[in-house]
View 1 (cartoon, rainbow, N blue to C red):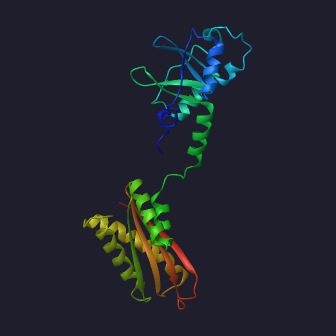
View 2: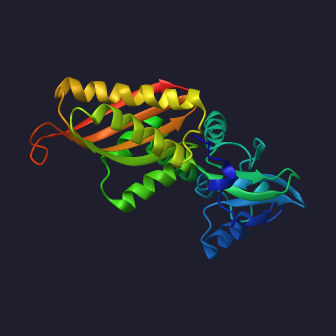
View 3: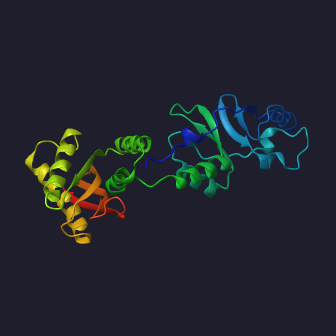
Length: 260
């Protein structure tokens, strides 16, 4: 899963205050701009920050910002990951940091709130889409919109996928099943006409049929089948009914694999 970078979550709108300014005026600036933090500068150099904690300090109104600010800040660039930023802020016990670009120009600000929110979002994300998961989702989905969604998700995860329907009597089902799967895989670019690739798909399809035949030996069936190609792996999944009473019989999911 790609790591979230600081530049993706930082606050790009921020306010600066001179280190020579008075604490009273800095606090007034923060209130007028509804800013909870201020970046402190001395000329063109960033020398500190005024955080919410700093604004709660007991300070005389005429005290200089340089006497109240949080100084000696670690240098954090926009290319750092959220996890790295969280570790640095925790180690230095700092609730806010300015963010710099490669030219050492301040381009944003990040707070504990930003990090907590985005680390939580990162943890809530779906696990990486595997060929097995995609094959099962596609085989069991009977809604065209959802089907297109999972096909797009497969593309985003660098997975190639194809879908087909197979229905046949018990005697012809094993041959028809493998033929349909291979044809669909070639037609959708999951595999090429290469013999090795076709054999790999055939093995995965045979594995699926063996599972179905174990449940209802020698009986026909009707299935929706998904074929997914991952990194050196072919996955075939079939979902449907098998047996004499196809209309009322229970639906079965089966999945087969083959290295390619």
